Image 1: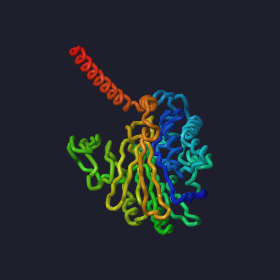
Image 2: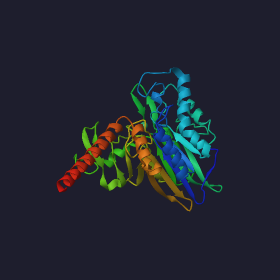
Image 3: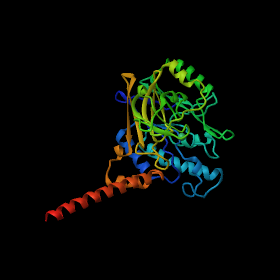
Image 4: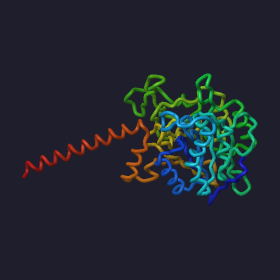
Length: 376
Ligand SMILES: [Fe+2]
């Protein structure tokens, strides 16, 4: 539990989820503009960074994906610190509490998770991860939200990041020890209504997906399985797949524990940058928030999610995803900024779209001129 007390304000508590901001020590301006505007307009009581908070495996690049301009632990730490400052200082300036857990990219460098967490701890608004963690899983913790002196809501932050170079893996299911800790803590808290944030979807996400035809509604191509897939219609509350969604490959009984405890209103994921959906599987609600990052692959779903809990009825919540344009406005300048900052895969798609629009507009104009000339 955090030493810093979070409380309902005016009967509400608002959590803003920023997933996969995933940038470097020099940052794409549109990400920061979007986050600053979201902090000011949505006025969250807590911001949660749900993994891939820094693109750590590119910190030493001279330019993204190019040769290296730094080396070793000290350069990595220096650039990690600068990368974090872009996303954390705006919160410190506004005195907005924030929490984090890891994604698969955060410790893809020579720094350990413990060393990285020390950099978060330099900010006074950082909450969570303030106590010791005796169950061998450094990222996993919980944060309480109070109504007066009574805890009324709980936030589970589960670590699914685990570098395994021997097996070429960078993430795993929530471990057996962490599942046991979750059950024990949930019981101690009297199964307090909760959210559960974790970077990688649980294995059971696979049970929510079915094979389909190329032209079926909601179909996306799964390159690993070499077939078209989509979310099963009877699971969907809203949204759809924009990319295939593999979950954790190893299952340590996390989903069954969540189902059994019944305290979790929603398990909320990141990692899959383009997906935006809200589904229910065997009574467990699962929400997928797209990435905020402009540096890494994504689509126009880029944005943040806002969750609002009612103090009088903490068993219910509202949820709204806000895209970049919904946050900053679709002005010509913001469109240009998006185009400049969009990742290298999306840029050509947007350029092609703009070229088609331009060509269509040109064809219509030419047709009109032709008609006018015929008349006069
Ligand atoms: Fe990820």
